[in-house]
Image (cartoon, rainbow, N blue to C red; front, top):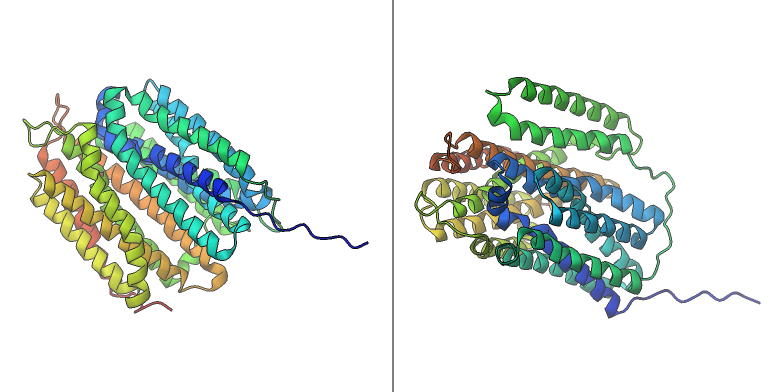
Length: 464
């Protein structure tokens, strides 16, 4: 007798819908901190620098978890890893919901960062169980629903925090994440583990990179207090140097490094990484400073906006960011990487300098934030695309991974520097930073962004 092969497993609309519901829930949970950060700072007694640290912890964890999640998915199966990641996210959301102080809330955000690895795993599952044409449609749908969830979280976080409490702001999307995870577990078939020959996780590199990033953020957060606590800041700098040196040594010797530093020797890669870092420093300044300026009392120099109003004011920027990816891809394909990146840098630098000079009306900030979000999306999409098409096919994942990790580092450094500037610019006995601190932050970010034009002149024309 001859054995008959079982037909390939297919998933239906219900399973794709479950992945879409999970994308909406995680997008909402990811986005609740940004519009409510001034409220959280007031309720938890945080300085601007501490608020900046809170706003980037999820992003840092995501950058560390994502490559590990992909490797584990290949080894043990995408569904199994996705469900376990969502269990960690759910615990993180509940910890954030009940957090009585900043340290506990930071822990919750660290655990929530595991959600960043969920979207790539969802794409892997869709590609495994659907034909090519249908999988592209499903991936686009899930991606769009994640963006929609982020917008919903931005708009709803303020009303929930003010109408109920900041605890429910985290609890409601966490409940949605738990429900969507149960649906995915029930509707998605169990995919078999993939082959993992020669695939290993660089655990020493992961630990050392985690220590490097967290220590760097602590150094930037405590920098405004160097006059009163020089020994502590100095000790953190020494620890940072030790972590960075150890991580560099480990990555250069690792068989399967988390970040292949040897790839940075290629001009097309290191130029993309430097540009991405600089651009994201400029972008993150607007991401952090604009909501803080909205929240400054109207009897000072701000607008006295509450969390609900801030979420509404940030919506055009979210819409611009969602359009920037497709526009950046079209522009890169038609004109090449260099023209798109140059256009984005000029637009961003001009918007940042304009915000430093003119920020007396709400529409000034709304328009400036939207232009910066659009410029950032154009630049990052073009740089990732350009890098992916300028290296050998087998090096695409490594090279683009370097650019994406650099994006996270640049964003984190920019946010933390902006928070440190506001902390340093807050007069003694006051909770409101001086207006000049905001202007300084925008000017510094604009100047740093403009410096990137010196490097774009050396980029190759077009895309190979």
